[in-house]
Image (tube, rainbow over all chains, first blue to last red; front, side, top):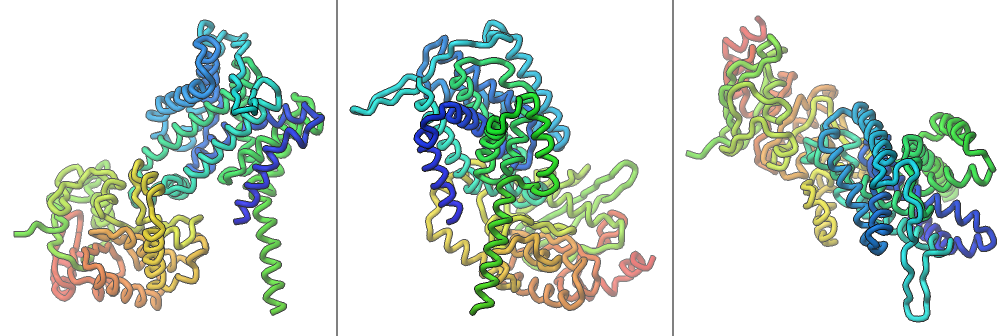
Length: 326
Length: 251
C-alpha cells in the first residue's frame, strides 16, 4: 500500500520533471542520462537482487543492444520500436549463448566469467570497424521519429521530448520487472537466491530459472544501452567498457538490490549527485568508493534498505505508543 | 500383483575406495511409515541421496510406481510427487511462513509459472491460502504466518519444512533425521504430528533416523542397513529381536 503511494508519487514527479526543471535543461539532461542507466540497472537487479547472481559485464550486453538498435535505425532505416525490440532480442540472445555454458559454474567463477565476457564484448565493439565503427563509434544515430495524435504533436528531437520517451521506456521496464518479480517465476528466482538446494527439492529447475533470468536481464540491459546511444546520438565502445559495468553494480548496491525501486534510485543518485556536487569525473570513483565503504558498514541494503529500516522504526514506535495509550 | 510404491533393487555406490552402498534392495509395498536405520556408515544417507536424486548410483535401479527414477534430477523428482526434508533443515529464511508453505504448492515449470500467475483466480488463491493456514495451524505456527521463517526456532523450522512438503501434495515423503536437534518434549509432539499427517494423507513416509526410541515407536516397518547392505526389513518388534541387527549395532 505504502509502496504503491511511493510509486505513484515518483511516477507523477517523473512525468512532471520537464516542468519542474523548466529553466534548467542541464538537470533534465542529467536525469535523462540517469534513466538510461536505470534501465540496465533494473536488468541487473533481476539478476543480482532477486536471483543472487552477480554480473560484472552487464554493460557489454547493453552494448549489444545499443549497437544493434543503432545499426538498424541508422543504416537499415527501421523505425524506433522494432529496432529497440531487436536490440533487446540481440542482447538476450548473447545472454543465452553466454549463459548456457557459464551458469553451471559456481557463483564466484561465474562472476569472473561475466567480467571476461564484458571485456570480450568491449574488445569486439572496439575492433569490429565495419559493424561498430571501431574506436570512433557510430555517430549520427537518428532520434526516433515523432508522431501526432490529432492536434498533439509528439517529438523526440528536443531534450524534453526525449526525456519523456526515456521516462516512458523506463516505466514500462519497471512494470515488467514488477510483474516478473511478483509472479510465481519471481518467487522461484528468489528461492534460488535463498537456497538453491531447497529450491531444487521443491521442483525449481535451478539452471533453467537462472538462464531465464540471465537472458531477460541481458535483454533489459540491451534496451538501456539502446536508449543511451539514442540519447547521446552516438555509439562509442567507451560507453560499454568494464568501468561502466562496475558502475552499474555500484548503482544497484547504492540504491538497494532486491528492491523494485532500488536501481532507479541508485542510478539517479550515482549519475546525478556528482553533477550536483560538481565533482570532477575523475574524482567520482574516489567519492563513490568512500560512499560504498560507508554503505557496507551502515546500510548494506542501500538507500532503499535504509529507508525501509527508518520507516519500520518509526512505525514500530507509533505502534508501541498506541499500545501504551490504549 | 500391484507394483510396489518404491522399489530399490541392487543399488551400489562407491566414493573413491569406499563402498558406501553395496547391492542394497528393499521395497515399500503400500502406504505406511517406514524407518530406515543403521549404525554410522551403514549407507543410509547415501541411499537417501540416491532416492532423492542427489547421487547417481553406480549400479542398480530405483523405481517409483514402477517408473525408473534413479539418476533423475531433484527438481524432476519433486515434480513427480517426491517431497523431502533435509537433515540440516532448510526453509526460505526471507519468506514468511505462509509464503514458505504456499511456495511448495506452486507449479514450478518455467512456462507454467507465468501462466499460473496470470490466470489464477481469486478463489484458487484464497483456497491455497486457507489450506496453507490450516497446515500452519497443525503445527501451531499460524500466529507466525506473516513472520519471516528465518526468525523461527530450529524446531519450528523443522515442522515448517514438513508442512511445506505436505502442501505440494506429495505421493511420497522422505524425512532425513527429523528428530535430530529436537528436545525430548517436542519429540513427542513431532511423533504425534507425523502420525496425524500420515493418517490424513496415507502416503509413504520414508524416515532416516538415528533416534531408535523415536523411530521404533513411530514406524510400522523398519529397514535396517549395515555396511552398505540391507540387513533386514520388518516390524519394529521383529527387527529389535533380530540377532543380526543386535550384532550389527553392538558389534
